[in-house]
Amino acid sequence: MLLPLSAPQSRVCVTGATGYIAGPIIERLLRAGHTVHGTCRDPSNLTALSPLMDLPGASERLRLFKADLMVPGSFDAAVQGCDYVIHVAAPVVLGKVGPGEGRSKIVEPMMRAVDNVLDE
Image (tube, rainbow, N blue to C red; front, side):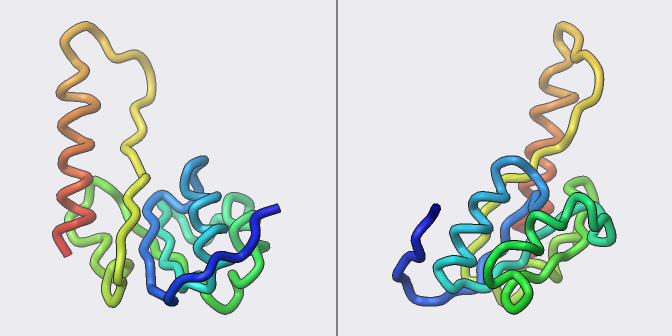
């Protein structure tokens, strides 16, 4: 069990809220009393979001925003008013990446995604 942390309360945007890495980050932030703006592809997907919504403090301090890493401007609402951004979302590549395709299929989309998140 994670114990609450002592820190000044902040508003923090966490990208990829339904992902494996973001969930524990969001839990820690909520337990510490922070307000969290989480981004996800589909805020209406209750199955994917129920573990987050069941976290202590989520009903009061967790807001979910629809965002797509490949769409410029889709993170603007989520990061607005935030003191910090924790960017852990990543573009999903389905199928095999062939020889010489790593840069175009993984690296370049990831770089565009970072630009889209931070270009608020």
